[in-house]
Amino acid sequence: MIAKSYILEFPIKILLLLAILTLLLTSCNRGNDMEIKISEKGKPIQELLTEIYSEEQLNEINDLKSSLKELNSQYPIQCLREVTGGYRAAYRSTNSILLTFFDGNKQKLFSQKQTLLKKKADFESIKVGQTLDEIRDFDETGDYIFLYTGRVDTPKISSHYTVDGCLFKISYDDDLKVISIESELI
Image 1 (cartoon, helix red, strand yellow):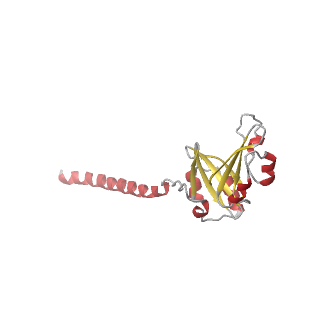
Image 2 (cartoon, helix red, strand yellow):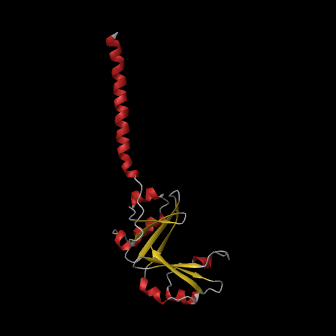
Image 3 (spheres, one colour):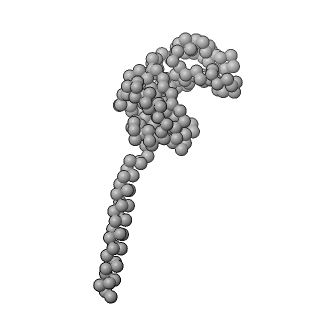
């Protein structure tokens, strides 16, 4: 009886050992699932983005329909910021920045690529009361999406990105005159 009992226990022990090994091996692979760290708030993108991509690579990243995790596995995210309702990842080339926005569930919403021509200091010349036309003449590469929505209830805010890592948000009144200028790090 003892020999028969031992013969039955041996395969059970082997199966148990295999199950434990499988569990250990799969848990080690989860290191790739680590949470992507949010970038330090006061740190500019010039310090965070050490990888400079070609324009073609930025276009490839832009075309991906990936989640935050999938994107990070293909193109490591060096700059991730929390924004209202989700996250913003940044990639750069020598002349452009690609911003990819994700919802709170880390699913891609959209991307936008901006050409970088102006510096932060250039925006010191913008003053409250200037017209939208003056701002458009000043920064042709700005994002003036509110002009194309076809809605009157859309906030009238243009976005402007600088080579030294700032985002300027310029708000306009109903007469399309500047009422406020805010800046933050990209």
